[in-house]
Image (cartoon, rainbow, N blue to C red; front, side, top):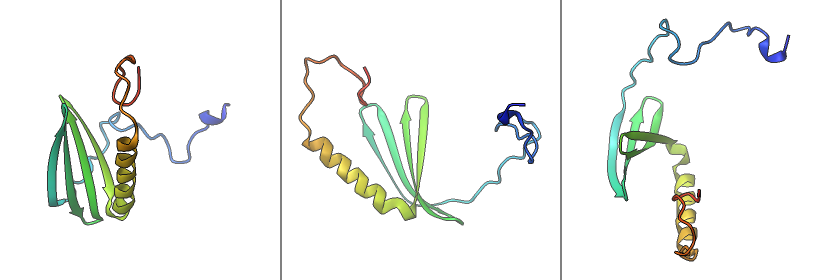
Length: 111
């Protein structure tokens, strides 16, 4: 028997959405403290400071067309998150502008 074929002591756990018997997660009450939105090119970013029984957190939602992505940063990491964003913005500003004669790539450097 291959090591990853050994039965789990916890039984078979289906992936989320594979079982009709799986109980839905309970709804957690979230209170919005502050919210702001910005549009960058074709993307809309919504930044919301929220609070629930587990604590405060920042929810950053990106909407582009019909796609939506969300990142959640706990309040304990907001100062580090802010520091890294400032460093990235400063580095992006300090770099020379891209050469217009190069082949175009996407915004993250893929060609």
